[in-house]
Length: 264
Length: 320
Image (cartoon, rainbow over all chains, first blue to last red; front, side, top):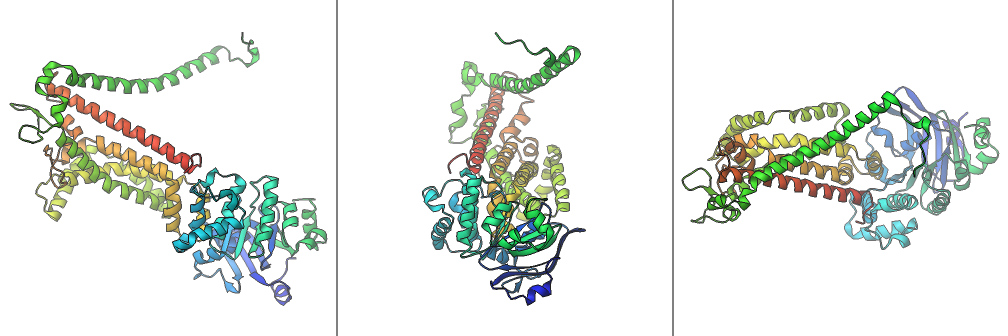
């Protein structure tokens, strides 16, 4: 009983839509991983996607920056529009798409380079002028509250930082390319509870400027940290609504069962 | 006094004997390898020693006369003549010359090929290229030397009109055929071992495949790639047969790669069979052998040390 495309199109949503997904199907070879997904991701808000392992939530996330393109046998059908522009077409310049739609991974994966080099990697790749780099580094590190800790240690190897600092650095590195959408694939699963809550605070700050989509296993995290929430089950988007609705009065019994912890 | 061990946890009877035997066998084979290495070095060093100690040898040659300019300001290696001349400088120059040419060809080629196979080639092509290059390592060096001597030399002479048919460029190309598989294999392993997470991070930031390979994967694999180059150097430096066949073996004091030369290793191979046992010439040849051994040993040691440092830095254990 996922929402149909027509119903979504006729709906008058208050929030501005950043990403519009219509009739999206995805396959790994013969495995049908995403089944007719229809979804509007609101701009400058945090949207969480929850569901049991293997339900397709990461696959969906990776469609937004086309990270799965290189996987053999992977195909998508349907439509994804970013600010109204199609991103699944053949002519789409992937490097430009990924500059606008950035991703933070499950395990912090800074490059084995200095803090400075990590942050300037993206801007350099996109041809940013050297004169702007120092400013970008400060701005990006300030945005993730790393600046005060690291400003005297910019030459230090990023792998010597703590896991939380590494993940913050990965977010800084992403902010430095000045994206519009941040995709986060279980960004806190390698962190302890304190670090997790601090990253959640950071997300609240970032949503002023960015559209954030977060995939998570952690129900509490979804209910605490997101404005909108989608529940996925076996490749289908079962229900999508604002987070309080999903957690207090879900329409679908499967959603209710999952969010209350009866299964999943 | 130790507490008595729990009886039920002890191995008993036949199994215990077998375990002990196996352990001893494994342990001793490790020592046999090290022992062989030490004995070889001791033997070579012992035969080289009279160059430093024997008055008889000193009448004909000393370490100093081997490096200083001879009477008319020349550097000549002519150990078998009326008045034997033992300048090792032309040999050093020749060895350096050919090693340099070989590495200049082999290292870029091998590393670029390794980057291609690990980062760009589709799986099928990769599974074809790797074993084929590794097969190249199995070609006996005498075959490569012969190929360089007969085929490469002719091509190059036709193409560039070299005065000397056999020269450092010819031998260097032959030698690079022996070096490429070593550098390629080790470098490819290092590149393939770079965690996928680094590539993903780079791709997700909007880098293309080239930028990812060049700016992330290669730096991350640097310890292994550097080790590959050190191994390649060791092979080029000590390789004998290819150089013996394709160098022309003229001990000329010339840095020009278009001229013939004679290397340390080829000198030993060519002369040791005919040398009078115990003569000054004999001891000089062993000195050259010991010298090759020591150089290679310390280069490998320095290479190891550097690789460890690089690795520590990449893993964040060392402050950059």
